[in-house]
Amino acid sequence: MPNLEEFRVKIDAIDDELLKLLNERMSYVKRIGELKQSLGAAIYRPERERAIINRLKSENLGLLDQNAIEAIYGEIFAVSRNLELPQAVAYFGPEGTYTHQAARMRFGAMSRYIPLATIEDVFKELANKEAKFGVVPIENNTEGAVGVTLDCLGAYEELKIFGEIYMDIHHSFVGINENIKEIERIYSHPQGYNQCRKFLESHGLNAVEFVPAKSTANAAHLASQDKKSAAICSKIAAKIYNVPLLFDKIEDNAANRTRFLILSDIITPKMNHCKTSILAHTAHKPGGLSALLENFKKENINLTKLESRPVKAKEFLHSFYIDFEGHIEDENVKRALSGNEDIVWLGSYLKEC
Image (cartoon, rainbow, N blue to C red):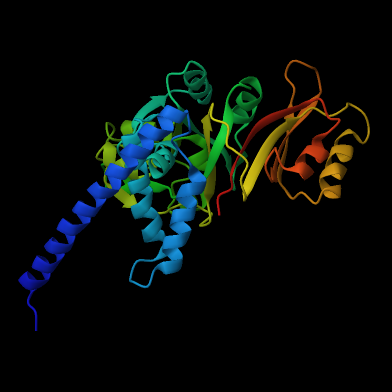
């Protein structure tokens, strides 16, 4: 029967072979990157990455599950992209926020990350060509849409939605004082606080002073300096600021998810399994919106989101943020939107599974 050392020798041999193969893979990646740059082609091709993942999942006969395959190859893809062309990614910060975590999921450890104070700052950074990609939150299935993101999408028309990321959101209760009876303040972003009210009530913490923070990461930082406090934040923020974890996964909704957008000035080419986002300014009269929606129905286009937003420059008028399945260049989409001059195309991008 093999002993522990024999197993370790076998693993070392496999690691040596993996490293050799990864370097061989990267040599082809670098050559592809040089070819793409000479042709002016896009470095980031999410449909190609999706096709590789799907192929590997279909051929997988081992112990790795689908999530493991996505995690491993997600990092390989991110390293490959940076080898082809180093990537700068702006995101709604600071470091340790859920947006930071979402950006890391897609762009990996090697990308250069630029944390910014506001969502609009991310749009400005991209508009000024200081970063190629930006990541911002767009909606949460508990709290609803992020209005600032919707407004910025309409204001920065030169930028497009390049992709989307869905991420499960888990809040933790952290603090340097393990005795929760001594806690006098709870730091949290208001949205995170509101998503954990049942936990606070069940532990007798709902009457404790709530101190709003700019972000959940900022909450962790404040709690790291205040022995009479605790914070509601992500695990990554608690780790960054070295604040002990007191309770894990305290959110009221176990299915709490946030959708993030990837922004860029890159136009995604027509492909299958796309989603398109638009901003529609409909006629201010009865039936203005229903006429547009009827066109979608006639063309058998599935709407996945409809959100009303006030037009701040015009009193009591509204525009509508709409997500639907399909690409802006699809013939049925062209027909559905024809004759509607007050449509702002926000982007077509590969739909997350």
